[in-house]
Amino acid sequence: MPEKIWLFVPLVVLQLALLVVALIDLTRRKPKGTLIWGVVIVLFSIVGPVLYFALGRKGAGDESNE
Image 1: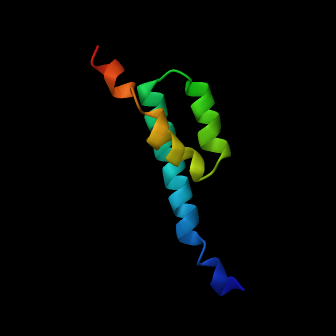
Image 2: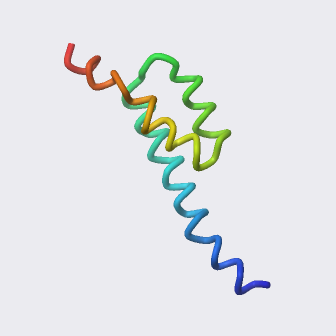
């Protein structure tokens, strides 16, 4: 059984890396709905950060050009 635990280590590292990078990006961009995106990122494990990077950052680049 302990040998099989090593199969999950890359998945856990990926999940934590996505979580940290998404939260750092979220705090730097300050888009509308920051609290909602923060909850989505934290609660939905790997899917939350992926959704944020796919959908949550759209339009954020436009606001920085103003």
